[in-house]
Length: 174
Image (cartoon, rainbow, N blue to C red):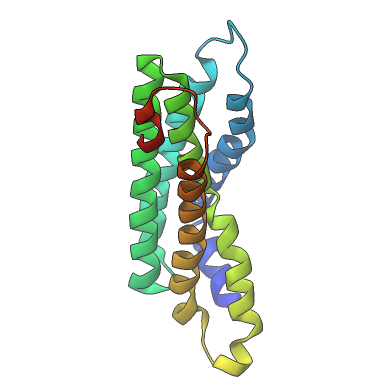
């Protein structure tokens, strides 16, 4: 645990540059669901660049991955998916397609929240480490893949499962 604390402390500026915009992003996202006439584009104009900062700093933080290439590969894959989702949300926002923008923004938010799902998985690995003899460098990557995958698969299944859309037939796959 001391090694982990030292690692994050040695990169405090990068860690804060990643965590603080992510926190603001997640706290503001529920406002996207409250569609009010005349709200204006201020929220999207704030969230999209903030999400880009979160994504860029995630790439930078992956250089210091505790779990080595397994963790780094999860971060690179899901961070790229997060940024792709943000770009799609932005394009639909500019095109005035509110429902499709919401669907892609939901994907981005759920991927971002994958880190929160990763924490209990890590907790499980920490709790069982006396039995498994796995060190954090051995299970961090696995925990990242599990946490991000659970969120990503869950949101895709939910988006594709029901009648969550009221736009054209193509909205189910967009």
